[in-house]
Image (cartoon, rainbow, N blue to C red; front, side):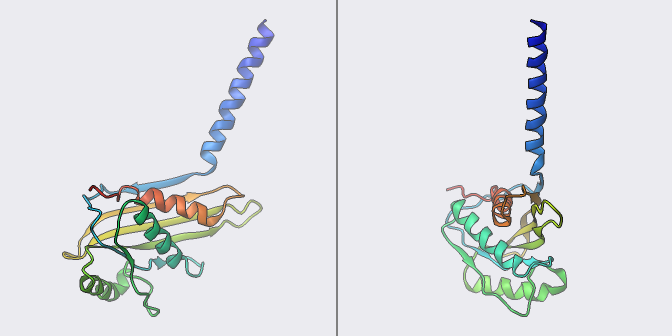
Length: 183
């Protein structure tokens, strides 16, 4: 009888260790400010995010995923701002004049908020496993005042067989989840 109890305890320990490994295997970090009160009728423009990675078009990819996440969160009017090929994005403080152009465009379009940000990591890790990893930062700007009303940053890595787009979509969806509409 004691042999069965010993095996039972061993199996429980192995199961607990395996579960811990699964939970910690695809780790990530998220930091967010409190969410503002947003209405479904509020128009949001998503501008191309600054790309601080070596991956071409990571900022454009992240912006497209973010626009879709906002629509899924209940925003009826989500617009993608025109891309300025000569600019990185308005998040970069060295290019704040370009940000002012984007805000001016948003005012002309009668948009209430602009979502901007930066992509810090967007790649597959080098090595045998090649896990996908994404890291992004967002700022929601009130167009009328030019003030940041919400911000979030996060990173996430996936499993060897995960795709970068699925890791990025999951991360961006989690980061933007506080930006849901309230009526």
